Amino acid sequence: MKRAAIIFTVISGILLILGVADYLTNYNWANNQGAIFGNPNVAVNEGVTVLIAAGFLIVVTAVMWVLARRKDQSDQRQS
Image (cartoon, rainbow, N blue to C red; front, side, top):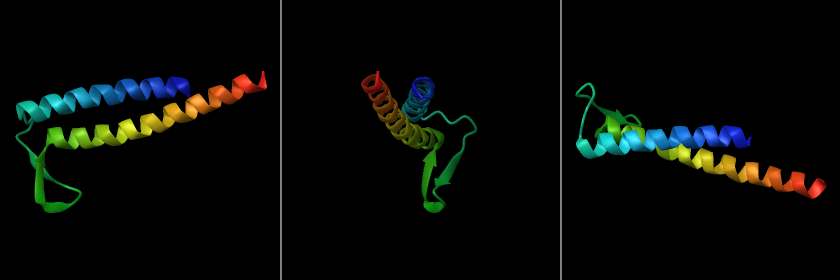
């Protein structure tokens, strides 16, 4: 569980960096803006989409770290 948490931490960090860079530079890989969550009134560039995905992944990663620490602490109590 701890190894998976480390891997997801690295992936979410990379996504966060790419999303921030894309959002700040307004660089569009395909000159593409699309609707988010199916709402045609809200058009966002790819950087915002990556930032939203990174945010969800960071939340999942935080939950994984909490579960890994709990499991680690329960293993120490048994020995």
